[in-house]
Length: 211
View: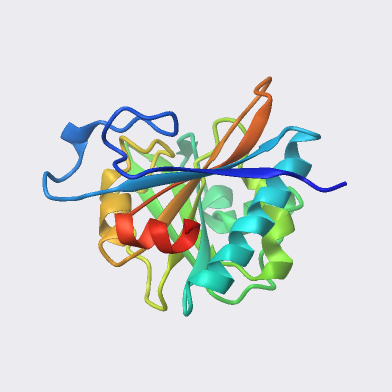
């Protein structure tokens, strides 16, 4: 069965549109952002999301020469500061739940401490074989992004991490968009009839991916 994927574009992500709602006051006054989305009917949910991921990955490979795709992950809740939590960190914890990224050598991981509580964040550079792991990391309430970047190191707010909310993660978004990156987030949860990805980037960079 062929999955039909629709592509939408909002040239100015800060004006009223059907793709995304951004708070202009959160972002630098001089920054310009466009938005795009790739949407498929939910039949079934994770399978449709996987097809969208494959479509976007192929588009990046074909249209964005030299770009790499990163998966950004993070804890949504603070954890107790215990020896076991510090030992397992993020990727070992994911592996215990069946999500094994150890075959991918380019991984980053860091810890945020606050009031004797811990959160772990990480990023892994994806290849085509690892895309099947991604839908499981994009469940409701997850703190997950995809980031397409030229062949440069991503910029992470290592002192604070991220929340998985576009209007709160402006530091993460702006620092990577300025380097011609595109950041993606899942849309469509629970009973939504459609599922897919929404993206933010410089207008000319988003245009390259969607033209």
